[in-house]
Structure formats: C-alpha cells, structure tokens
Length: 387
Ligand code: SAM
Ligand code: SF4
Figure 1 (cartoon, rainbow, N blue to C red):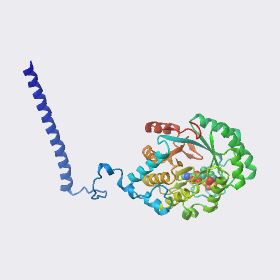
Figure 2: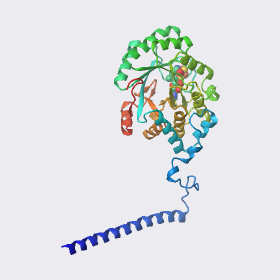
Figure 3: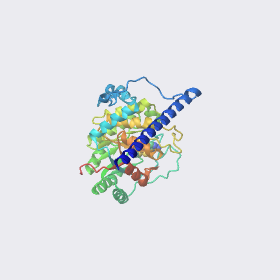
Figure 4: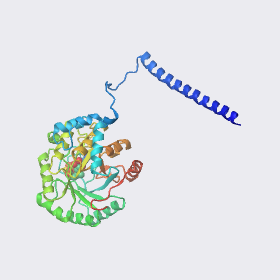
C-alpha cells in the first residue's frame, strides 16, 4: 500500500519538525527568561573579569598567551614569574606539554619512606614535629636495626614501591652510625629497589661512602627561598644546605631536593626556591613539593593553608623549569582532594610516597591511592634501567 506508507511518513516528518520547533522555543524562552530576570532584578553581577577578546581562529587556538611566555630553559626569577602568572590553563598546558616530551604522562613513580631514627633532632626547623625544640607528643627512638629496615623494604616492594627512602632525624650522621647506614643501603639495594636516604648534612667523605655502598639518591630539601630560610631554621644556613647538595653531587649520587609551601612565605619565595633548584648544575633528578602539615606543638601549628591553585601553579612551574626531574607530590596529600591531586599530576607531578605514614605524619594510604590512580588510568613506573 504505497499511498498509506507515504501518508504515515508525512505524519512522522511533520511530528519531527513540530517537536524541533517546540524544543527551540523552550530553550530560547528559558535563555531569555534567565537573562531577563538577571537584568531586571539587577542582583546578579558577574564576579569574573570580562574581557573583550577576539575568539581564536582554529589555526591559532593553541592558547595564544603561550606565544608570549619565555621558552623552556627559563632560569631567571623574572622569567619564572612570567610563567607562574600566566592564565592557569596556559600554564598547565605548557607544563603538560613539557611533561609529555619527557615522561609517559600516565605513569607514576611510587616511593616508600621509612623513619629509621625518629625525633629528638637538635635542629629547630619551624615545621618539624621531630625537632627537640618543640613540645610534641612524638616519642624519640634510636637508629633502627638493619634487619628490620630491610624487612620493611621487602614489604614495600611487595606493595609496588620501586624506590625506598630512609630518613633520620639528625643534624647529620655521626661517624659511628655510618657502618649501619651503609649496611642498610646495601641490604635494600640487594632487593632490587632504588635507594634514597635523608640524614641531614653530609661531609664529602660521608657522601662518598654512601655512593660506594650504592646509594642512588640523597634527599636534602632547601625548603624555601634563601631570603625566607632564616625565618624557618636558625640552627643552620641556606648555604649549609647547598654545601651538602654539592657534596652529594661530587660523590656521584643523584639529588632529591625540593621544599614546603604554606609556611608563611610569599609567592616570590616559592618561585625563587624553584629557580635556585633549577640553576643547580645539574638540577635535581627528584623534586619533592610538600604542602605544610601543620603539626601541633610546632611554630607553624596554626599556619594559614595554601590556596590549591597556587600549589598547582608551583607544581607546573617545577615541571617546566626542571623538565627531566621526577616532581614528587609529598607531604600534605591527606588534606588534598582527589581532584586537586589529579590537577597536580596534569601539571607534571609524577611521583608520590605510598603507604599510610610519611615519617611521622599521615599519608593517604594504599587503598585511596590505588583507587585514585585506577580512576585516572595511571600505572606505576618501573625502576630506572628496567623495561
Ligand atoms: N633531617 C633530615 C633533613 O631535614 O634533611 C631529614 C628529615 S625529613 C625527610 C625532612 C623534610 O621533610 C623537610 O626538609 C621537609 O621538607 C619535610 N617536612 C618535615 N616536616 C614537614 C611538615 N610538617 N610539613 C611538610 N613537610 C615537612
Ligand atoms: Fe631535624 Fe630534619 Fe626535622 Fe629539621 S626537618 S628538625 S633537620 S628531622
């Protein structure tokens, strides 16, 4: 029955056209209503900055502001400030571009940190619960036995960690401690893990002994800018910190050095800290970015927290200034939302500490981390030299 078929087809077409017109009207009406009510009531003011800007054409829509940013290799405070102050999306785009040129963006390096000697430290770092200058609940302990350190490292390896970091609350190791420290490095290295230590100041000969034992990384954070350093620590100087980093380099050990945000420093102090690190020759292979954990009993127990976007900007800047470094999201992750951490990874962070403690502070724990990485489609990076 062809006549009946075309009659039915005509009705269907008519129905479709009518419903499209009706939908348009409804949408159109709701837009008019919303804008009308805003203008009529005069209450709704846009709180964002409105700029008259030409829409980018498809050929130049790759963030036009980037063209005015300094190219990679910027090492002066002024250049770094220009990068930092770029619109957020431009900064993150550039950081992600640098990240992709140097790393697999969906791989993350997993480290585990163990406190091998806790509390009673003679240094007066304003943020630290392990300083003997602060009244905290922390119980001080002696240097851990080598067997126990190696057993803990084995557990961390079974949990997916590829780098094992051992930290001691010391101004620096005493000569009498060196034999045990060296035995720890050898024992952990023999498991096939990368090794890292953070023991405070090192003499050149101590650094050389650690290098001979096979230590891969030495952590020694500069923490902040040279200008702000004396506000945070008075028992040593910024120059002392740089001297140890120099000993570590001379001994042939890879450098891990970064800092803390949220201690009352200015944005310029944060940028300056990164510029100092980027100008080390060569820059550190690993750059931890900590968000202050305000520990009760320390001088910074009531410090104001950092704006998350300012934190993410610093991560992005670290990635751009030190393209080949592992940028590590370190202390303070417990207080960060999953979304903030995801933005940090997008900005170029590609290393975290796993486990539910970070020396003496809380860390998100394996459950939350593995769920986050799964949701983001990220997987663990293999140790260097493996494929
Ligand atoms: N005593 C050694 C030293 O200071 O080099 C090692 C101890 S620990 C790994 C030192 C680092 O942990 C500090 O440099 C700091 O960056 C970080 N840290 C310590 N307490 C912190 C806190 N409350 N919030 C954020 N980061 C902290
Ligand atoms: Fe001691 Fe290190 Fe804590 Fe400073 S950060 S008080 S040096 S353990």
